[in-house]
Amino acid sequence: MALHDGCPQPRPDWVPDDAGGGFATWVMEGARPSGTVLARPAVPRRRTLSTADYVQGVLARDATILARAITLIESNAPAHQAQAQQVLAGLLPHTGQAHRIGITGIPGAGKSTFIEALGCHLTKIGRRVAVLAIDPSSSVTGGSILADKIRMEKLCRERNAFIRPSPSGGSLGGVARKTREAILVCEAAGYDVVIVETVGVGQNEVAVRSMVDFFLVLMIPGAGDEMQGIKKGVIELADAIVINKADGDNRARATAAQAEMRRVLHYLHHMTEGWETPALLASALTGEGVPEIWQMSEEYFTHARAVGSLTERRRTQAVQWMHALIAESLRTRFYASAEVKARLPALEAAVAEGRTPVLAAALELLGG
Ligand SMILES: Nc1nc2c(ncn2[C@@H]2O[C@H](COP(=O)(O)OP(=O)(O)OP(=O)(O)O)[C@@H](O)[C@H]2O)c(=O)[nH]1
Ligand SMILES: [Mg+2]
Image (tube, rainbow, N blue to C red; front, side, top):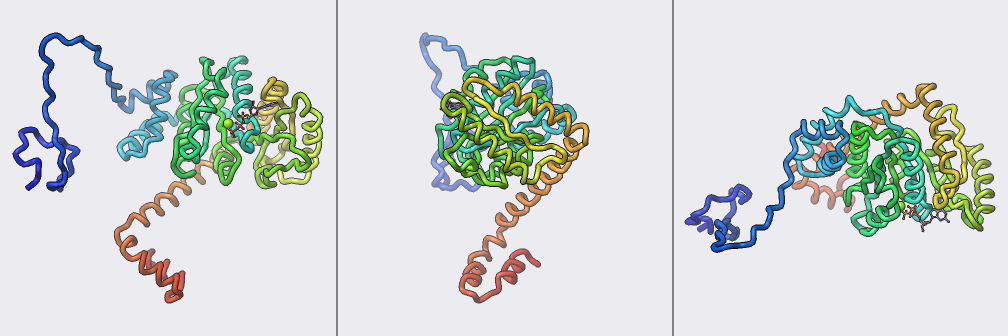
């Protein structure tokens, strides 16, 4: 007999229909306090926002609603995802006007410090800046979000700045989708510069490159090897190289690294047609070089707009993104199918033992 039988209370709707005797929970009416109790103000429940509330709130530049819209986008609950797509559809006509800037560099290159310096410069000259982070490993490293918040303390206090740490956990694909959508929401909220920070490991750089207009690789003067773990491929993704920490005793080494980088860049393929990837010096700590770097990025945008590569890149990015989503969704559906789940172990064994050709096994699962 199910434990709910005979229970005077209605079954709560979250009790599974097939809950048997093992489901030993039901809801009882709470006891009413008797006598005088100290009236504690009820904590107001967060009002559920309608799609229109989200759209209007974001367009009205309400930072709280903007943050909640991004939380909605980050949710993996199907109902939230459906609403998030409706919100995005409502916001889409108001997107696209920001400079989308990606910043990468090895751990400790000074990305957060640099973004703080750049962000403060931007708010000073009257721009509104949003900073998003991509760090699929953040659930593992834990402390990195806090550390970033602290390092951008000054920027956090700026009224015209919005900082959002990476959605925690999840695959790079999932984090990348959420960040792309967050870029759009920030644009609709009137941020005219959106900066995406990512640590330069693995495929993160490629993911960020595919969602920004302008990609900046931050380097530090290393001892001897100026490429310091940054692969040629990453430099070829860049629209600008910045040698950071060009201060104090480091200044001379930074200048040497800059000269070396300019030589290297000369021989590499440039990311943007007609734009020679520059190598500049900066000190994120003192702010030296930061206004010049912003100036250079403005020149980049002027160039990219004039030759049409800005629009072209965004169109390509949107189409590629759609194909990536289709591929991801097909893959998820395939592995979630009951038939595939049932047949996969036997076919894996057959392939491992060389009894069935790999292609034949794959086609059998695919129903081809
Ligand atoms: N001297 C000097 N130190 C700097 C400069 N920029 C950053 N730093 C220092 O370098 C260290 C790392 O800086 P972060 O800004 O946290 O570097 P990051 O690239 O964001 O690091 P991760 O997020 O861990 O990948 C900190 O101690 C900074 O103070 C600079 O221009 N000059
Ligand atoms: Mg950082």
